[in-house]
Image 1 (spheres, rainbow, N blue to C red):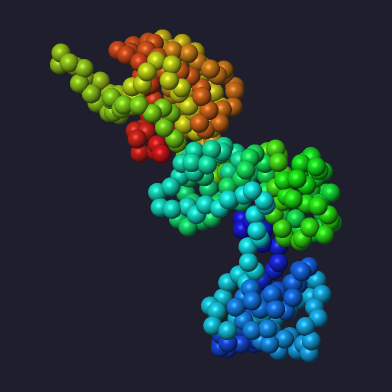
Image 2 (image 1 turned 180 degrees about the horizontal axis):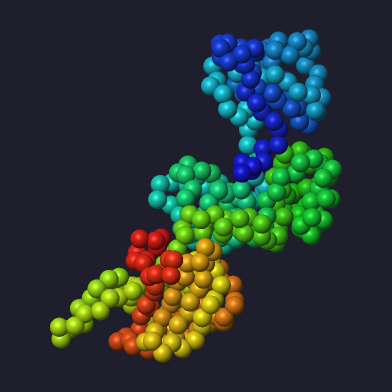
Amino acid sequence: MRDRAWKVVTLVLSASALSLALSDSYGLRTVQPGDSIGSIASRYGVGASSVLEANGLNGTLIRPGDVLKVPLGDATGGIVEAAPEPPPGFRRHVLSSGETLSEIVQRYGISLDALVGANPDLSSLDRLPVGVELLIPPGEGLVVVLDHPLGLAELLLEYDADPLAVARANALRSPFDLRAGMLLFLPEVEPSAALERLAKVREAENRYVWPVHGRLTSYFGRRNLGMGTAAFHRGIDVAAPTGTPIVAARSGTVTYAGWSSRGYGNLVRVRHHGGDETWYAHASRILVSVGQHVSQGQTIALIGSTGLSTGPHLHFELHVGGSAIDPLGELR
């Protein structure tokens, strides 16, 4: 993760070895256009004279590209550079305990794609730490880091972005507004690479997701059928209204999609990496075909009551090594 790609390298160093006192420690600051000795000293809470002394300077003349030592005093180490400011029109949101990204996008009236585009280096969609700061964008697009002021043209070509739209979105009026390490917003550019990466992360974090949300009416294992008879139930039953979407619990390839004469009614079977299979029975309608690759969370069928069924529900099975196991311990 690039941590929004803070451009300037900031390594906390000791003057000679780790055993030296922290008062001898310093950070490295690459001078940016507009910087002065006074502004750098103020940013890091040290005196201008300390910066001059640490760098052996007799005057305050510095140039962009110069690397200055910044005395850290009682600092305990870490990143010296301040985070780059977000593009115009962006807001900030600090994730609090129990908050989800779904709640955040609903609160701000944006899509999840827009949120990912503003924060393409997110480590997860579901397991973010409390206190992480998120950028809230004004619309759809992608935030990128400008490595060098002369690299804007290359970025525009790489993402096929509209130069005028980019200039307006970032309030760019001249080349002098461009700075190395600044965040640029590319309107209407889809964060496809970030979305693909996060989809893989989500599947790794949530190996199997619930194929439908409803009322659990029957568990895995032996069940009494009445009249002194019993049978082994090889999956779980989840009741839901007819037509409710059934989604793939995990990505994979459809190996069966059609009518089953074994009581399943309309049945979909999906084979996953490693050979495991999930079965989805009693559907009113099947929306996929054999050989089709499906993604985790993709709608593959609709709830129904076909086959041996007493009402609309999903009969869901998980097969590992060729045998059905209790899916409740695997679903997230």
